[in-house]
Image (tube, rainbow, N blue to C red; front, side):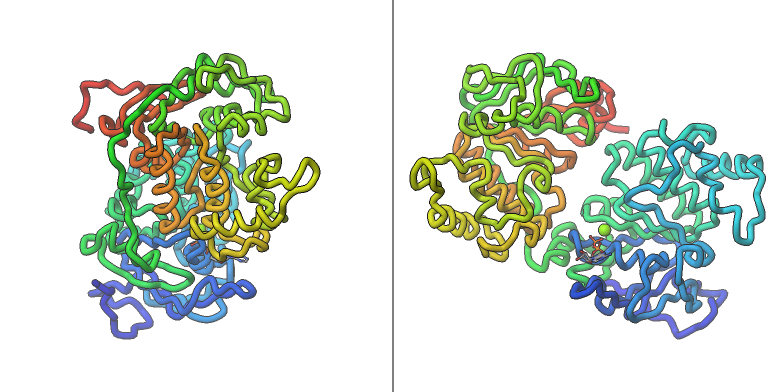
Length: 531
Ligand code: ADP
Ligand code: MG
């Protein structure tokens, strides 16, 4: 454990050893009953990339929002470059040399890159800079840090990766020395993420300090110098990245040992369960989302669909689940399914042995105002075992069944009468999974199984999916987390722009190859070495 050295108290930076870029001391913040930050102290050295890792809800964004002047801490102090600094708002943060790149970009869509960068910076001490001057500075910054974007492009025409660069340029234009990035890679392709990391390395080399918030262990290991771990509002450790491991970090995040890789035997694929041919999906706005795709899934295998979000995967799931219409053909056990997308189709799919864990469990998987036990019967209320007779549901049977499912899937708290809204994301997901998996379906459709789910629950969910596969079921896994697809799927199909870019066996491909396909490129098969 390499804690940052304690410097002698100094109110100004000594010329020999620079003061830390940032010191937070005893920061606490509560939102009503939720203690989001508890007595947090952290020292970030100048010219380093300092990672902050923690599960959903650990308090990372809250801490950074305090540093950026969005929230006022209940207690504690902020010291920037050795000086105690009060940061009541983001203007003060910018003045103190802090820039922030948010999870959801704050750019004006119908303005150009240049206009967005300059916007809001005119006021304050910098008097109305001429756009020409700004353009020159932008070009310099772009060259220095690989931050190339066309200054005259409209934001709405830029890819997500480019928009993020504009956010970074905006911060640099405001002379930020300290850059905070909150989960910056969530929306990027692996290539874009690599590019971002090169930018960050350039910034570090030029003496900037970077705070990188993420829940992805790999990013921490790849790019940070130091990492601080948060758990339930507390800072549990700060370690040098070179002296830790993903396993140790996971344990510090969760508070117990976690199995990080999926333990599974090679697949034993059997007969074909699902066959999709030339499927075309046109949405309500007449936009073609799925452009004639074909694939199949056999019993005892997990087919993973990789791709950046928005490339037709969601529409594919909806059609398979019976919630949207399509043309082409889908056969289950060789029998054609109805693709007209009439309302009752979700039900008939279930009756046919297709279970569905939808991507958006708030919208489609659960009714949040209903209790857990009512949600367990959701979609299956016509089942014989839930009904006393034609007219009456057997509430006692449903309750007992729910209790058993909650125990087996370790839903916390195991209270069938709690409203779905009152469970955490991971536990809501377990409720949907328990309901769908224990149906013993022939085909399980599962979208973003671990989105918003903690590492501990991810481990469990992955085990359940593999167990179902090993019972000879077919599984279609759609996930935007490439790592998840790679570790869970037996076979992988990459979707880009509504089409299938390629198919690989999981054991015979890698992130780089899949990443290229995710970006719409067809990788040269002979090129295994990597750039
Ligand atoms: P992280 O960024 O690590 O996922 P957050 O800092 O966003 O975590 O959240 C920490 C805790 O504080 C969570 O329980 C969250 O629900 C709560 N929280 C965050 N912001 C607010 C807010 N504005 N109002 C109420 N509760 C909040
Ligand atoms: Mg956050």
